[in-house]
Image (cartoon, rainbow, N blue to C red):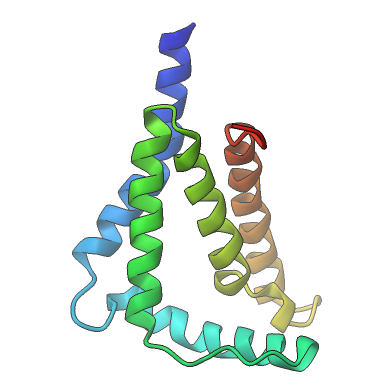
Length: 140
């Protein structure tokens, strides 16, 4: 049974590790394609946050956000494979931070095609969040 648990953790974490590896290879000097696609979505997200809460998100370069995402996915995935709850926590933190920014369905009218596509992707990624939370105990 322990072997099946290990295989399941490897298959689950491979999604994150392979994604981190691909983003690392494409990183370049400006964050690569991930940084270019994240920048406009982050601007819209920060405007939403400032309008709703009154809090200002300080400006920063997207390459740092992409580097943080790569490190959280890579390190979290590797720790998750070996059964560490720290890996599950890193993957949960990554999903909690980046999912609402990347899948910004809330910016579209529900009758639009983009809304349905982004909402479907959001719910699929939220499912990964739920699976990672199973391996993330509240009390160590």
